[in-house]
Image (tube, rainbow, N blue to C red; front, top):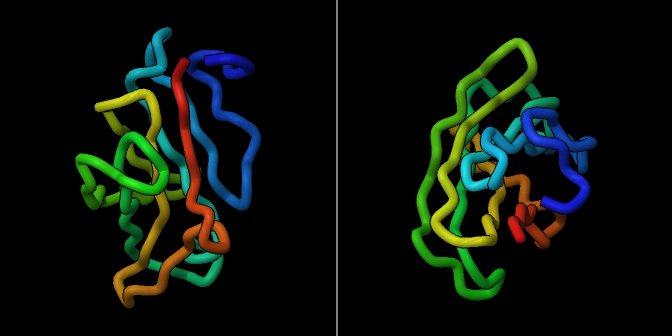
Length: 106
């Protein structure tokens, strides 16, 4: 978890923050306040997969909960790398300009 303190959100990167929920980083909370949220989306889904950035495994859509902080979802890591992006109910995507976001545990 180099550089991340457990239980504290990371600095935002284009409206995305990550907070480890356990010391080993295998349970993580994602907070989204990116472009879709700023455009007024009522519902956001995190599209995510694990492993190599170019060959996602265990791909799933996670419904995010709207909270006072933004849209949030918790994920249990199935590998050491989580790759993710977001979409709204109108199928508009925020994929970090095609690079997606990555969370790694070491």
